[in-house]
Length: 120
Image (tube, rainbow, N blue to C red; front, side):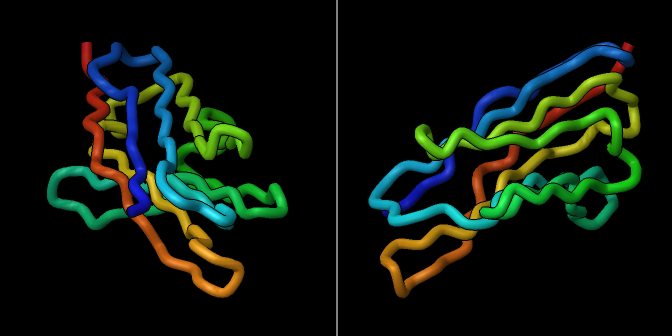
């Protein structure tokens, strides 16, 4: 059974920083693409940042130059460093990963959401 376990999040003042982590556990052959999504109240879930197995990153325009996605393959963990946070970054953040269970089997997994609130 593969699970994505997230940590981090919470309340931070505007201009502050937070770091989210998401660790994959279970029997894993390989982790391919990984990403972070967020959903604000009354809005659709949106992609915040993604990182493919080749190391290429993609960011939403609203977070470019403020957020950074990274991964530690040895720990099967990905991170989202969020700097210069704004009130509009307030949302529930979700991690997502495409995981190979065997050389021939891939499956998409979601972690539980974590609340990020940016407020003074």
